[in-house]
Image 1 (spheres, rainbow, N blue to C red):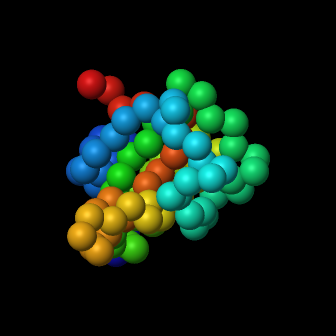
Image 2: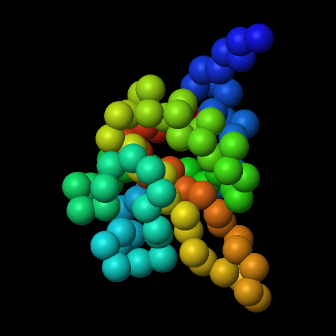
Length: 100
């Protein structure tokens, strides 16, 4: 069985997105998981962040889709909490932008 996905499917995999401008990835809540190492990231207004939830499989599928468009993307775990519970989960940092 083959499962074929494309960037149109990516829209179903994330719940929140925003510009990465202003986020400090060197000293902040984002822990690197896969992709471009934190020290090699050059983050500017062209970067976008996509939160894909807490599921490992969903995060890996979404990340792989983005890597096809932006090989320098990074997958991070957002450690932000709300009353002791993780709210955001996995986050993808990329130059890829979804169409509005």
